[in-house]
Image 1: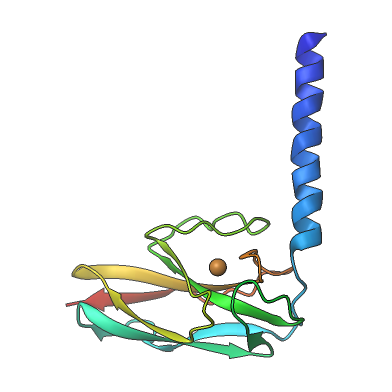
Image 2 (image 1 turned 180 degrees about the vertical axis):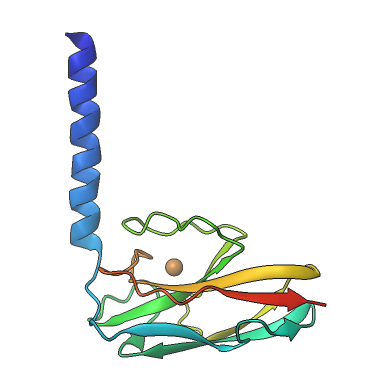
Length: 142
Ligand SMILES: [Cu+2]
């Protein structure tokens, strides 16, 4: 019986967090698109290089500003499995936030192949419904 109660409590708590994040996520226009202006897929870059983000169909707003059809950029570096698209994106050395509304950045990566992917987050760093996410590009750092 106690096990059943614990199971139910767990089920309810995960349900409520799902409901909560659905309420806190923002919708995105169907034509919204995020992409890399540079570098492009397959490009060779020096260890320190500029990444420029492109966004169509939506606007950029800093984190904390709840404005319809806007968001801020995040770069996923060498990320094979996408983070939870229903929760606030964590800040790690592989997930970089541009909460100031930046549309470009300087990255320094070790020599070799790396992948980069962009995902837009809303004012709470939660990907939109549905997520606005770029193609994953592969670059070579020399
Ligand atoms: Cu963010």
